[in-house]
Image (tube, rainbow, N blue to C red; front, side):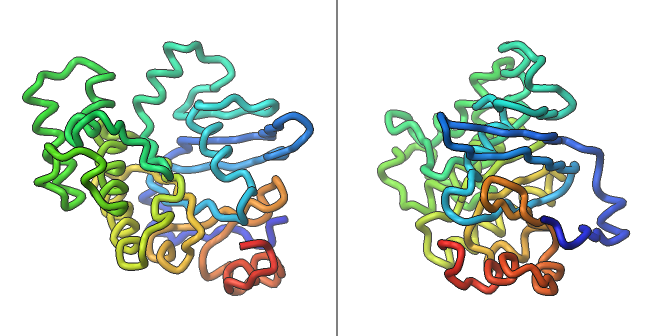
Length: 264
């Protein structure tokens, strides 16, 4: 259970907006197995929140529920002011256009060039000229330090470059909320730091809201405002880095001290 109240600085508090995401009593089951149990969670505009927890804690399922790729079995999810249980397919698609998602496994189309991969969400949304799309693609690739790769195929890129292409694609429609599903998985420490720096740069430039899944707490520290710890299907704890280090909760203490008592 939570052993600390999240404290946000007065300056940061003034910068944050209203809620962009709210979960109330959300549960998800696969057969007889409970993955998420009565989750309560909120996210405010302008926040960068780190979603952490041991393997199998339900972090990826959590993100899929939040962005409407999967339905909850119980509870309420309010995304950008809309109850996901009440919106139809067309309205849900419009909501997804306001949300970005960076996948753990890149999820790039291997039959498309890098440029076409980045342009895909913008073309799906429609209403843009070829020139507008080309300019936006080049702008987004330049932002992730890949200005010269748009004609390459995904199999010509390194793992770190694919992650950055995924970030460029997630940002192409200027989303209000971006989910990152373990964006540094399999990357070396230097490349991981670059990815996290890009996440913070994106948030700062556009005041977007970010939810980041990662096991790499060391490199996530300078980026996130607070953490949410999933453990045994529940939100076990939420708080800042300082609160984590001051916590007397043994699970929080061991998790942040990288001990191996909870299966990492």
